[in-house]
Each structure stands twice: as structure tokens, then as C-alpha cells.
Image 1 (tube, rainbow, N blue to C red):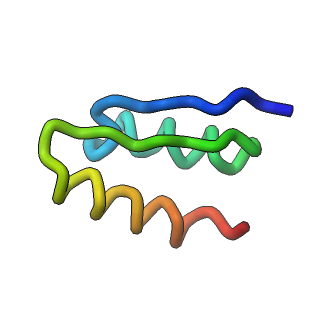
Image 2 (cartoon, rainbow, N blue to C red; image 1 turned 60 degrees about the vertical axis):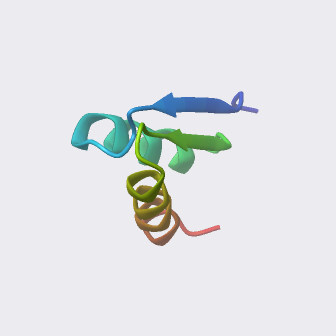
Image 3 (cartoon, helix red, strand yellow; image 1 turned 135 degrees about the vertical axis):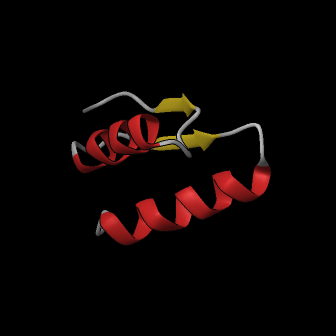
Length: 52
């Protein structure tokens, strides 16, 4: 089973893509950003992109 991961800077294109790819592979992903609103927005997009 994949390990849980934290992606700092996941609200940007590269970090977001990595977060989605890891989530699709089965990892539990934590998304971080300097701006909380951007992290929340990225997390919402990631949830929509990766079905449970």
C-alpha cells in the first residue's frame, strides 16, 4: 500500500499534478500552500479529479 504524502506547494501546476497522480495511485495526500484559500481550492479540485 502506498505511503501517505504531504505536498507543499500543491496549489501550483506541478505540485497539483503530483498530488493528483499520487492520489490516483492510492496514497493519502495532504495538500499545502502558503495561502490557505489556495490550498482549499486545490484540495477541492483534487477531490473532484480523483474518485474514491
